Length: 106
Length: 319
Image (cartoon, rainbow over all chains, first blue to last red; front, side, top):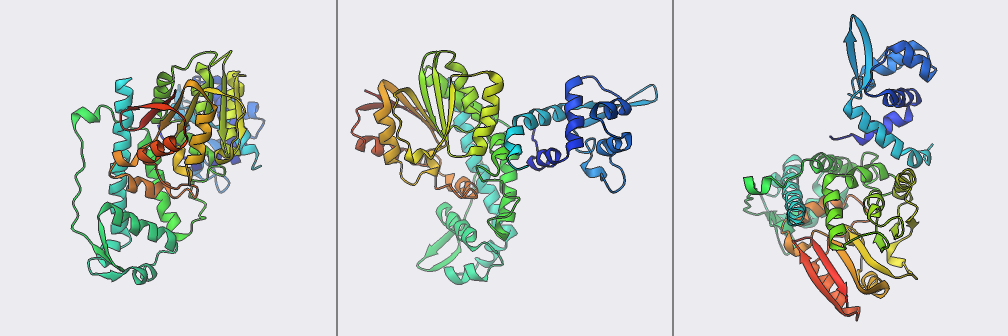
């Protein structure tokens, strides 16, 4: 499974996307709903929605966690839930390994 | 073990073979072959090409010459008659690993950026600045294969002392796991970035017998003695191997082993193609000849015996 190094670097620079991934990794393989993610990562649901699927100018769709293939949408009984993909799990593992290394550039 | 060695050799061979194809593609893409369908003076050809990084272009042309794609007569160059056979059979295909292909594709793409400037931010070949990309390379199954070969050839086990020169970010964990809790693994690398990634893995694994040191291996003067010294894919960054080989032979215990893993040049005829892409790393000098390692060993004055495991592993036993 190939992981684009520029994707990892981009996620690392975005605190909100990183926090979302870390939380979804914590509950993996369970999915959860948007409001719950927003509560845990202490952010506004609209920002979380933007990070997950893209929203206006702030988060363009092509760099959202879903379009990068890191998070998938699970639909159940008309509700949308979000779950880390296998690929997303690998990215989280690398982000954790690179935490010390990346902190040198912060 | 036989199957691991075959896997290592087949994949190295494929890496070199695929690199020839990508080199060929570069010649088409930059109009080099079209222009060289007629004889050109070497220097005026280099100056006439719209290729910002002239040093890279020269390296590319020299690689074509080494591979026989371009011929050089005196100061003129022109395209050769060239044909290339890509070998694939059901027998060797079962040893081929898919993981390294996208990493190599990433490196092939970097040539386009390097053709603009050697400092382009999309070139990820710096050991420190791009330690994350190097870690992805070093984490491939291909690299685990040769680490398994090293562990088996060195009969690595608890209580042994191992020195790993140019250890990278993954070997401290993968090699270190065999030596604890009473042995010792000392990993030396000159990249603080790579060592910081290794360090975080070692810490979470709790391997307190693993010690990492940031150092240039050309300048090492170890005081301790070791049962096994490892040099895997590191000699290509050294301008002279004699001093390092002598130092290693001095610090090996009697019956200790030096294990070297490299795509030895005499065993892989297409290796210049792969070397061209590796040269995007400014530290890269060239893959070693097995014969130069053996002559360095001879001049070290140490008594030794050596055995070859396939085409890419040398096991040297100090007598």
